[in-house]
Length: 114
Image (cartoon, rainbow, N blue to C red):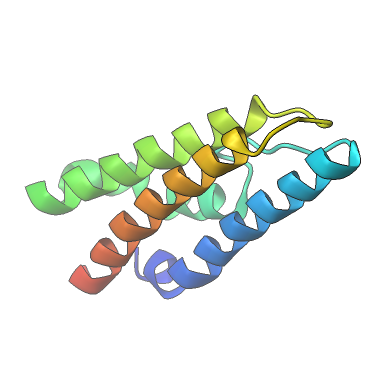
C-alpha cells in the first residue's frame, strides 16, 4: 500500500494524460490503444498491492478503496466505449468528471496515510 500511495500523483497524471491522448485521437481519427483497469500502471499497482488486502483494512479505508476501484473501473469502461473518430466532447467530459471523483477519493486516501 505504501508504494501505491507514494506513486498516487504520478498515477493520477497518467490518467489525465490518457484522457488527453484519447481526445487527440478522437479529433484526428487515429486509433487509440485502450487499456483495461488492470492493464494501466495504476491498475497494475492497485490490483497487486492494495486490492488484495482490502478485507484486512479498517472500515473507512476499505470503503474508500472500494470506491476507488469502482471509479477506476468505470473510467476504463467509459473510455473503451469511445472510438475514434468521435464527435462532440460529451464523452471526454464524462471521463474528466469520473477522473475528478477518482482524484478526490485518492487524495483523501493518501492523506489518511495508512
